Length: 308
Length: 307
Image (cartoon, rainbow over all chains, first blue to last red; front, side, top):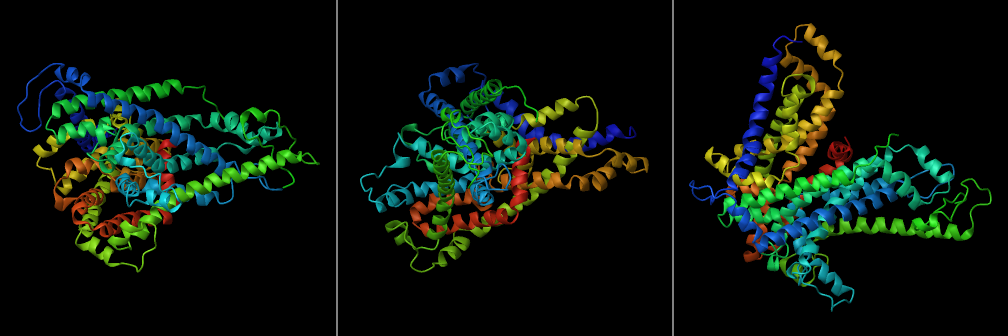
C-alpha cells in the first residue's frame, strides 16, 4: 500500500486541514495575541499594552457578574438537567410495573411515546425556543401569567425576565427545558445496553427501585453521565447560553446586568462597543473557565471503569 | 399484579422492604400499596413533563392563527377563525420565504462540504500511519471544547479581509470549518471499525487510493455518514451564533436570524400574529422531519456521545 501513499495523504488532508486552520485555529491564536493589545476592531492600528486588558478585567464589575453567572450555569445546569434526565430515563426504561410472564425489567407503558416527545426541543433551534419563551414570559400578555390569572392567582404576576432577581432563573429554566430530552434519550440508550440479569440479581436480593438505580444503573452508566456532564457544561458556557440570553433578556443582558454571561459580554465588547482587544481578553478568561471546568469534571468523576 | 416488585420510595427504606420475587403469598399489602403509589407518582411526573414540552409548542401553533387583538387580550383562548393570512403575511411581507431559501442554500452547501471534507480527513487519519497523524487528529478534536466566541472576534476580520463577509459561500466555508471537529472525531472512529481486507483487495487489483476511497470505502461508511450528516444538518440549520456575527446583511439572513430580527422589528410594527406564524413555520418542517426519521435522528444525535 506504499505506492503514492504520501501524495494521497497530502492530497486528502490539505483542503480540510487548511480550511480548519484558517477559520478555527488561526483566529484562536490571533485572539490570544490580541488580548495583549489595545486593538479596537474598528481600525487596523493597535499597539501592545502587555497585561493592561487583564488588569482592567479584574476591576470590571460587569466581568465579575458575567463570570459568576457563567459559573452558575456551568454548575447548576448540568446538575438539574442530568438529574431530571436520569430520573426520567430510569422511569421510562426500568420503572414499569412487572407483568406476569413479562421481562424482569420493563419500561412504563408508552415509553416510546415519551422518548419521542421529550426529544422535540432538541431538534428546534435554540433561537426559536428562546423567542417562544420570551413571549411566554411576557408579564402582561404572556402564556404563563395569563395561565396564572386563569387559575385565580391574580396576585402572583411576576415580571419574569424584567425582574433582576428572577431573570437569570427564567433563562436557565429554558435551557433545562430544551436539553433534558436529549439526555433522556442518551441515557435510555445507555440503560438499554445494561444486561437484564444484573437487574434480575438485584431484584432477587430484594433491592427496591431506588437501590437499583443507585447501585446498578448509575454506576454502569457513569461514563455516559460524565461525558454528558462535560458536554452540557460546554453548551452552558458557550453557544446555547449566548442565544438565550441575547434573545430573551432586555438589553441584552437583563436588567442591571442580571443575566449577562461571559460569552455575551465578549460579543458585546467586540461588536457593539468597539473594544475587540478587551473582548478577546474576556474570551481568554472564558477559555480558561471552560478548560478548567472540563478538567475538574473529568477528575472528580474518575471512577474505576466497570466492565459488563 | 401478583408478583409485585419490592419497591421502596426512598433509599433508606429499601433495606427494610425485602421480599422474594417469587414469593407465592405475595408481599405484605402495605408494600403493594406503596409500589402502586410510586408507580402513579412516577408515571404522573412523566406525563407532566410531556405536557410541559408539548404545551408551549401547541400554544405557538394556536397563537399563529389568531389576530393581534386576541393574542394580547386572551393568550389562551382558541382562535375565533383560523387566520391563515398571518401565514401568508409572514411568508411574503416578513420575508420568511427568503430566509428559508437562504438557509437551504447555506446548509445544503455546507452539509455536502462537511461530509466530503470530513470523511476525507477522517479516512486518512484512521487508516494511514504517518508522522503527525496523532497531532492533526487532536488538533481537530480539540476544537470541540473551545468556546467558539473567542475565535469569532478575529474570525470576523479574517472573513472580512478575504471579502467573504456577508456572502453565502463565506458562511458555507465557516460552517464547514466549525463542523469538522465533531465530524472528523466521529468518522475516524467509524472508519476504524470497517474491515481493511476489501480496500486492500481493491488496491491489489490496481485501484488507486483515491478510487478505493470513493468507490469502496465511502459506500461502506454510509451508516456513519448518515448519522453524522443528520447531526450536522440540525446543527447547521439551527445555527444562530455564527450567522449573527458573520452575516449581517439583511438580504442574506438565515432563518434563525431572520426570526430574531423579525421579533425586534415587530416590536414597532405590532404584527405579532405574523411573527408567531413565522415561528411556527420555522418549527414545523424540522419537527415533521424528526417524527418521520425519528430513529435515524436519535441515532445520529446520540451516537457521538456514546462512543
